[in-house]
Image (cartoon, rainbow, N blue to C red):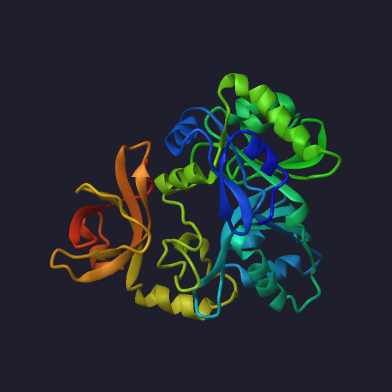
Length: 361
């Protein structure tokens, strides 16, 4: 297993550790519900240094990004970021990612999922026919996400960048906790506000930044947060998790990601997805809440009242903010309307649920 520069910090804090995407990662510290509540009501720190980062440079960098991603990156100006996906040649999803525009038309950073770093690198490289300079900086890049309604207030004294007014899906580069060249962005995966900070671990900068964050934040209730609460927080927002809710077999249109699929440019599988949009999809990713008692789990069958299979659960949990069980799953379009009654197959039982709209909170 790989370690992040913060692995020993997690162990020293008593985190429950487990393997995730090849890394030794903290799953929880004080408990998922407690950590979840800390982020929703105050602030918490996630070590997400396992994520992948690629730098694409040169006069054809934008052209390459436009050809491999579904969203329109030409709309990005320096300091703006965008959520997008890499469609495969069948119209499925290689990965979902963030595109950061560092210098318009010239320099971009792509942030990809930890489990897909090599897969994404190889995929993008395959289309790099115009000598775009590509650098995989994943191993030397640290990433901490400080999330929650009070996160920016706590961190503002550590930087001259105005993070209190950092707009959603924008970023700035500067000094943070005395460390130069730190990228601070607002693209949160929790729906609770906050920032993400990217920096290179050199000359002890990882320890310096971690310690500065906790020295200023801990007296105000800032807590370290594990991947368990990261999952319950994103699920309450209805945000997709690659490998669960989207993968190589799901199209962005089925997954409700039509808003990041722009037919104003050419990209991989555009004709397939255009045809799908015109004809309409057969299945759709929906959110649902349980009416009967029970927790929906990944891969459970979704059925109609007669017990016929109409889909499957992709993510599910007991939502800490709602005190009820919720889930996400693909269902046949005929059963995807709001308030539609569906049933989750749990062992031999059919547990009643209803389709609700995102986000859950």
